[in-house]
Amino acid sequence: GENVEQHPSTLSVQEGDSAVIKCTYSDSASNYFPWYKQELGKGPQLIIDIRSNVGEKKDQRIAVTLNKTAKHFSLHITETQPEDSAVYFCAASPFMYSGGGADGLTFGKGTHLIIQP
Amino acid sequence: DSGVTQTPKHLITATGQRVTLRCSPRSGDLSVYWYQQSLDQGLQFLIQYYNGEERAKGNILERFSAQQFPDLHSELNLSSLELGDSALYFCASSVADDSPLHFGNGTRLTVT
Image 1 (tube, chains in turn red, green):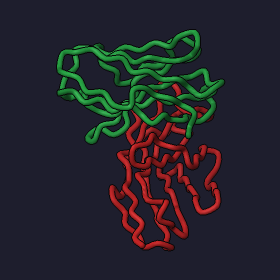
Image 2: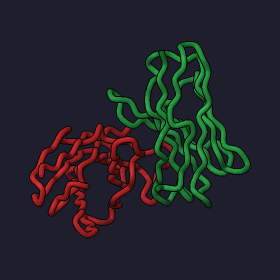
Image 3: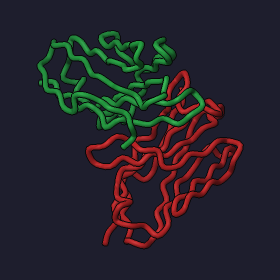
């Protein structure tokens, strides 16, 4: 099955700086890569996703890049703000147009992002 | 607010007992997914239902079962509970297989 590795497990940045979280996946058949943000006491919330026919996607301060050859994808947050503090999860799925599919999403172990004032 | 409702928020029970977790998906969503989140294993896919039928099975133990009812709400039944079953259980829903998942706020299960 799919295996998703996520780094770092904890990331501390100064407010206003950029943050980058990286994930690698093992199954070359994976085609859908969402990112979720989880705040304390809440469920994961989808913040951005990318499919394998696209190399980069941007939404305001958030961007995701995908390198299918190297089997890795990254989340970039620019101009970080205190409300960006949370745990971020990457995930992968073999289905091009699926939010889950037969095996569900395979998640990384999460990155605790801390924004220092 | 994702629109996915899970009850109860917290559940404390003893080993050997049985509990039922409930999930109401977002209005219009036909697919329901159950995930388990623990500190050491992260988020693990358990099972998916689509419009009342089991669609996919992940790392779900035989002691666990689920169903989706005609009104599309779903229940996850956990029996013969062990200490290791203590975790956060999340329900997610989506319109169909080609749409993103939306998660509820979870049920925290503590087995003592």
